[in-house]
Length: 435
Ligand code: UDX
Image (cartoon, rainbow, N blue to C red; front, side, top):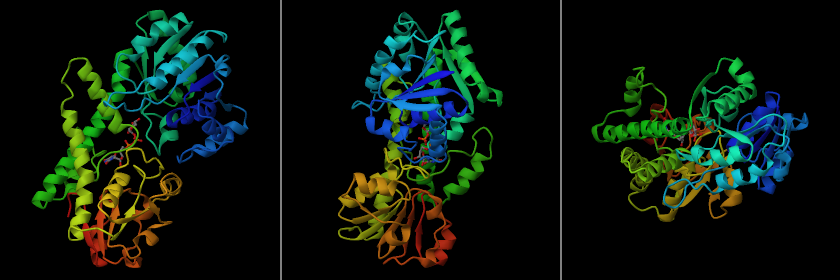
């Protein structure tokens, strides 16, 4: 099938490569010429395990191409929209890219043989699909909403074998059936592998995405609130999480206490969902204010720990920060807790040296004011305090006896280290809710 993917950021680029991988002929469209140039050359614009191989393989096979020219979508029967919906100043979702993608797409609908299907994948405020359906239909297309749940650093795996596929369909029964059948055909390989498909109306499908992310954020802030209580009472939040997580109703995932959530999705999606709910005149999500506050407090807490460990004054002192990406196996630093903490310490006058296997080189290029070390040993050398803020394996596997800091003080912002190993090597170890 001929497919177009509009918006080749994280979501769109991975989706385009995965659709080509399962046998479709795919054109990816983006306004960013540099990105289109890289993708066309089979080079990933971001660090994502397995993505570059998949991209290069499918570009070479002639099944996948990228362009800035919208007219090239005309022979596609299915158009995925995967543009960003970033956070606006008031916390709501900025819909500029979505509006412009739809406007640019409309003149090209109905040109290919058969039905033209527009598949919304971006995370949007509830009500968006209803608000654009008429324009799509008038232009000769059918709209279906198919939210994307991929996690960065597992993006390929999550796209090819998602936990579930969600289809939000039109109230018009014929349109609903046609769009569902065509999307089933697109995903035949995925559905054939046993992935469950859930069909619902537009608003429910839109809500599935934002409520899932809000639930995940709530889980993380819940365990971080427990970490605060553990710190005050001498309890251990890692043991607490293990014990409550064994109850299937709670589940053990997303109960890792630490410096809180970051990235391009959870912080922005929870705020946008709350803003949208308030627009609807509801206070149902007021509790998300507390979830956000807990998350912000975690960042301040680790910075304060470092400052306290150095007697309240970090001016001119070397501090090693292990990690800059918002999570391991990624170079994404959007809303990264690690980078935020590094900035707080630098603002307090410390000489902060950051290292990160993937984000480090990007940081060096984009933020020359930040000192970046090639590896953890260099960053830690002569440092007065060390903070582990992104739990890359290479940091988790460090042998503390081989390091040469000025002070053996480690703040484990992700509870990723074995405290005993570090204490045995003579280090003062500070965890998050497990000191
Ligand atoms: C998230 C959702 O998981 C995904 O389904 C959605 O499509 C996009 O948003 P992602 O942003 O890639 O994915 O990251 P995720 O793995 O969810 O982690 C988000 C943040 O939470 C990271 O900063 C991570 O370090 C933090 N986190 C996660 C914790 O602090 N504790 C945990 O237990 C889990």
